[in-house]
Image: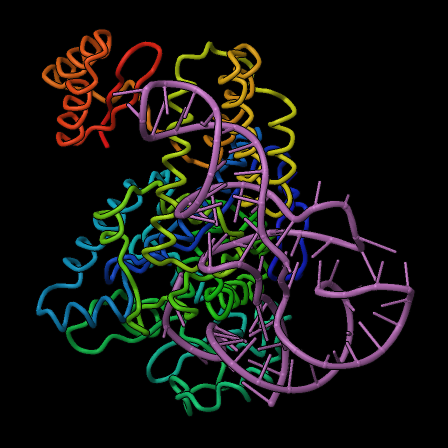
Length: 454
RNA sequence: GGCGACGUGGCCGAGUGGCUGAGGCAGGGGCCUGCAAAGCCCCGUACGCGGGUUCGAUUCCCGCCGUCGCCUCCA
């Protein structure tokens, strides 16, 4: 079974699912108040890869990822743009799924929306209030973090340390709260704001409540893995856990967080304004290049994304696609067991995708050598193993048979073959130039001129 | 201030107490090719700085410098 770094335990631990062979995972999804940027893309890809690999390894996976469709930022944007908050939500949720689809991120098994769970959130908050773990103030209902055993598990800091540190910042709701770290479970609505009824007053849920309710509802107590970007470890995940602990329920068994996308050594974030949206990236580059870029670095490390690193990934993709074209004609075969074992060993070691890829590139070279030497039978199982492993990481190679070449282009290629047969090199070169100018790559093979879209 | 991460060849990015410094990209040379393309082969005197431990440190320890992250907006 795979071993993963657990943020709470601060060490790499075996996943050990609640039910052997079945993995339940919850990954915090986006707040749909704006277009997703590369950071959102990274976590989506990282957990997509983890999910695919777990399934490839023979597990049944239930993958839940939410959409936060009610939040202060959504309200703020709607206000600023003079439209309804539901319009904002609809627009950016569409953008989100479009980007996910374009990147080949599989849709979650469940994609719960916060607004569909408000009643159940109110139930949870009532439970918390009833237990004395939460209390109302004049602007909302707060969780009393001092009532929670082990608060700070994910932050790895005591309450005192946390409070001392945040000193420069304004404490939300200061003065009304019993402890500065207490966080809002429910926010009373101001006039004109969207609201739902509650025993304490109309309002909306705080961010941290939805994920506890939805994860436990869909995956049950003690689900296997809770994931997201590193910046969610604290406070979001800490606060989710706090609520579960306060009502005596088992929460996530493992906490997995991915590192940030960086630009010039700085975290990409909306607040810094140094972000590239996924939509922009996908408009200009092969979506697979970003997946490859993410796979090339370990998921917990920061990842530098620049025009240059994306171009490098695209060049690498060329090599893999060339491999795919070259091996497309090979017979079906059982994937080479040794190659798959090596791949598994790497992936099981805290999702070592860089190491796994390195191993696969070696095999790609080996396959090319064998094919150069005319040893197709020996290459076949190796090629099948590479394909299987890349598939486990969600990296699709371009399917040569999917490329339709127009008849006029094929006619030029045929004319070139005739010229070459007659050793009319001038004509052959002229025809090649013509094909290139039409946007095709021309390759001479034993079977004649082969063209494909550049 | 507290907690934590990082600093590796032109670029990206793994890794390890000593064996040839993974892999990718870029670059140089060669094979192949009519010429190319693709592929294959060869080519790189790295590990922020200063101490320490050790037979031996890039890898462990201490200090320093630099960069970054979290400390209730944040994937």
